[in-house]
Length: 101
Length: 303
Image 1: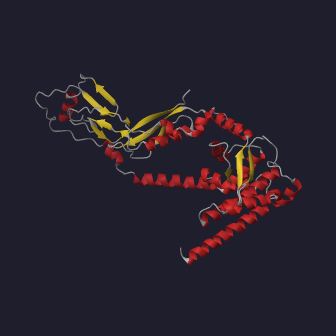
Image 2: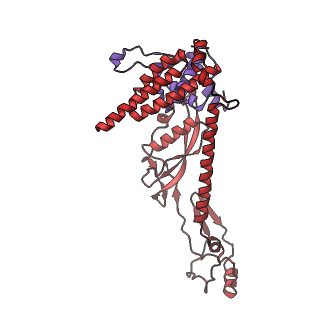
Image 3: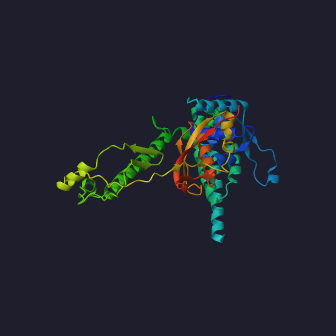
């Protein structure tokens, strides 16, 4: 979806979302799980996830397990791309140097 | 749970479902079905009816933001022509220089400023009324001179004056001669605003040993933030802890001097909290006492 490796405006909430994914970069998280980790309200969280996905930092796909076996609807899972991992690490490193990305 | 509560929760759940479906329909058409399914699935993870309702209201706001992003071209749509038709009504809500979002932000900022002003005004009024009116008199009120000089024990010589404050000992030279002139003058003709010297009493020098981390104090490595390890962040964070005689915290630790990295400072605070009960109390003349002191915590990665 959309252009790849685009610049993303870094708000505090965006940084918190990235931080949640950087804890374990290979982990796939649904929006509900990101909310539990960051405490960001849904009105802010989902636009951020879509922006990061549009910029090529995240990819998303539907949960592959059968909803009837799970006993709940399937979730949309997000994961950091290699580009997203590199760019997110750069952003946090630049903050530590006192430079805004 | 009563029948009424159950029926209310069911109704709230229905409202949340309806809000999400309504919000998803107003999103750009290319995302509409995806968002509806995603949000309804995430809605199931919410524990209470109220949090579900809050989630659904948030989704309504998210739809507006997403539509706004699409209208600015921040998020390219799979089918821009179709998407443009879906959110054209939202894009029309921009009013010249001020969009709906900017107006909301200004309104919130204004409310905060008004609240802050009200708080400051109330506080200053409270402090002014709480100040005793005769405070100035208390400060400058002359102390009546003593009729006779303070009794001096025979053979007791004053070696020195030691003013004891924690960690600092101020020595006043022995040969400062302050006793006779002032006391005699006040005895003869008391000056209304002269400050008499306090009675000379020998002071006791308290030997104080500052506290610190004691036996069983947690390892710093256990509180090294994992993201900081990943990013190679290091630093020294100094926290201020208040510890009772048994080595337990009497209040929540605070950052005394930050490391320049919020994650490390937070890790240091967590370590300081976890160490409660394992601190070595400050002692005065060998007796443990309640005290507050800074505690430096170094986060350093092994090379």
